[in-house]
Image 1 (cartoon, rainbow, N blue to C red):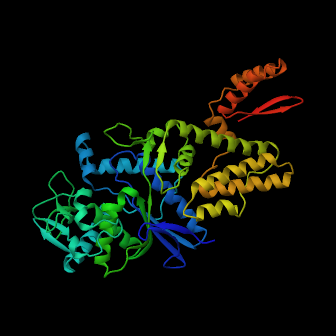
Image 2 (image 1 turned 120 degrees about the horizontal axis):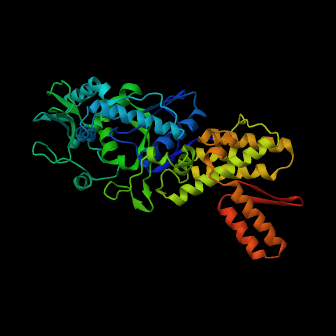
Image 3 (image 1 turned 135 degrees about the vertical axis):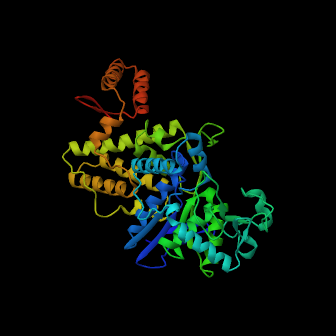
Length: 457
């Protein structure tokens, strides 16, 4: 089956095919490293990590680049507030980002370009834009002239006259059009800066990605991704710069954008004090639990983060790991099948439909418990592990997961089971049902047999 992806550019789901049948090129906007990554930053990292794995099943090679923005006014401000060097801030939080993403099961990209390592390429692209008449110099700044690119606004569907209100633009008297955006700006100490034909300065945010994409993946790539908040102005500006610098060539054939994350139905923001960092969440939850939750909603839809939903994902994984542990206790081998289960794979190939894929994953886990014949049971275990391997879940030993991650008190459970048995013997079925339901809420299932009641996570 081919891969279908929703293309922001065409506003429809399309069958994906690569420019080069032997290799897919994909670029995703990475973090600006001035603080710990919040859970919203983690969503594209997890989603495009998964897409990369899906693409690998269809193409001999996938070249995946995810950048690090290490020159930005937010970094400058954080360094000033903490009284340390800008490079120290960016290095500290780059390392933290790597550690947090690794805990979420996100594989490192093939290429991780840093903006500060690409100043020559950035300067060269700006010079080309000036030569082609798409950029101009004004008071030490270099700006892109959006009126020189008639297709500006096509990705976001915005009209030029409506853009000023919707964009975070710096309106300055030296701009030819209020929405013209900065390619290069002057720097004064302690701001970082580099020599350029326009004086000591630093690049604008948008030009960094255009230069890094061109340098490492080419003038036209297959997929460009990021959060929905980047459609305008960041990705719109990237397209304008790249198309004009490369003689009209499309920057990317497919544009993919993931939806926003809310916290308990409220927008995540510093002003509300509800910004959740991955670093802090990992102190209370396993990485796989966070990954499961990030995959629980379709990537293009909003995802609401809540303590209740996180607990539900934890219990779900506990149950799946318990099914694997039970299989192991019955002498079965925990080895993944070579082929991905067809229904599971079909869900992911259909615009990364993770809710449907996770439903299939849970169905596979239930199937293990329903089978009696050892060979069929072994095949079901192998299918479950193959599906988990592709989606980045079930990566731990079941005993380790259930021992480390479960806070269940076995003695308390035994007492509740004994109390339920006593209620049944006394024909107090209402109390027996209450205790059974309480155990189910804790993720505990009961198996009644002639020899007594057995409980499992």
